[in-house]
Image (cartoon, rainbow, N blue to C red):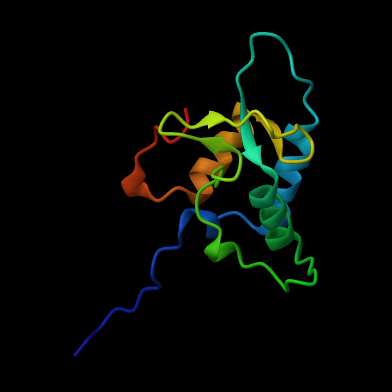
Length: 121
C-alpha cells in the first residue's frame, strides 16, 4: 500500500524567518512619516513582545514565542467599541506608529484567515 506523506502547510508567520521580519521592520520603520500617508498605531507591549520573539531576546519574564503572539493587540491603549485611542497614552511610551506596509505584514503574518483581510485597514 502506498501512502504519500506530506508536511502540514506552514502558517503565514512561519513562512518568513524571524530575522527577515526584523529586517523588514527596520527598513519600513525608517521611512519618514509624511502628510497623506496611512500609518497605524501599535501598542508598545505587543510590539516589544514581537521584537523579543523575533530576536530571541529574553527578559525577566522569559522568552517570547512568536506562535502565541496573535494579531496586534491594542487593548491597552484604546477604549470603547469604537476603539478610540485613550487620552492618557503617550506616543513612544504606550504606542508607536508603523507605516501601512509594515501593518500589512503584521496582518499577513499574525491575523488568522477567518478574521478576513480587513483587520485594521
